[in-house]
Length: 359
Ligand code: B12
Image 1: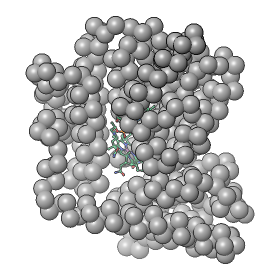
Image 2: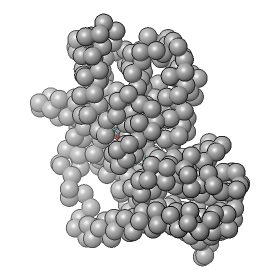
Image 3: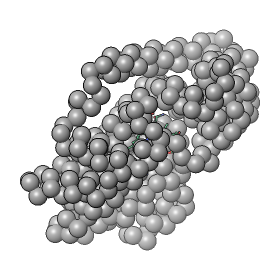
């Protein structure tokens, strides 16, 4: 998915035991790797390398190769969009060659094993998705999702809204529409983009339709009884993915929470002020890609460091949390949810605890 690339995800210092042994600073290492790849020195070329290194660092620190797999898969699709040069070295090969000059043999061998395992997993997934291709792309989706996705990709906003409102009128709950129609449609959109079936522009249009459709469901929330509890929801600086967070926020609103949806890429100082001003007892923080996890961790640290946020519980979630069991602790969260249903359970548990302790 293309966006205006701006903010770097390369940290000031590496976190992992392996990369922190490298004798050049992270920005310098990214430059050396970029030069070796043959990718252009443009925001798009740099983004590929920076996301790769940031993801590698987090995945090494957590010892979780699964975190690196989506990055490697994305690079396969993204590289040809960024350059038409005939010879482009895969980023992991350029990283290997660069680290070989800067790490001792044992550390290098450990990194190579880690990346090798991720590469093998990425290749296995790739061949599985090729074998599915012959069996008619959208066949795994329910009819309501297929219809919705057709409207969304075509940019038929009105038809998309009418479709989901009809589903509700026919007995589906708003939660079902969010979880069983809009969320799977967005995930399928990602797969279709990866396979080159939809363009970046079509993805942007469809995602915009989904956001408008979610807003069109809002009037249906008004009848819900309120809990007199407020939450704030955001993604950390740099993370532009907001649909998953918004789905969870809307579901909690349906459960009676008052919600302040700050949305994507919130500066951490502003986030703290938002929590304080709202009088929130719960902060939802989402990350959609491993490269944004250090930013999420920094956001949690800021909240913890502010005495005005004492007693605010932090619930984290998003795709990376489905792959790395120790990640909740790594970012310093109180609660972790790997999907929306777990998020509802976690918030219900928190509410019961806060009521029992008089918070
Ligand atoms: C739409 C989209 C975008 C849009 C986002 C627009 C918007 N306003 O949200 C735009 C165009 C901005 C975008 C940009 C990029 N994207 Co994008 N994007 C997607 C896409 C297609 C769909 C995301 C989505 O809406 N998912 C639907 C929701 C419902 O699912 P979800 O996020 O997983 O949420 C569920 C759970 O995870 C959980 N959850 C989520 N958040 C939270 C938070 C809390 C607190 C809790 C408790 C739970 C929770 O609950 C949700 C419901 O069950 C995905 C494909 C995919 N597989 O997700 C790629 C994807 C996430 N993008 C990807 C990439 C690489 C990028 C870019 C780098 C692309 C580029 N520059 O070329 C940029 C990076 C932007 C940035 N700086 O963050 C990759 C990430 C790969 C990786 N390394 O992990 C993906 C997977 C695409 C792919 N197939 O490779 N993207």
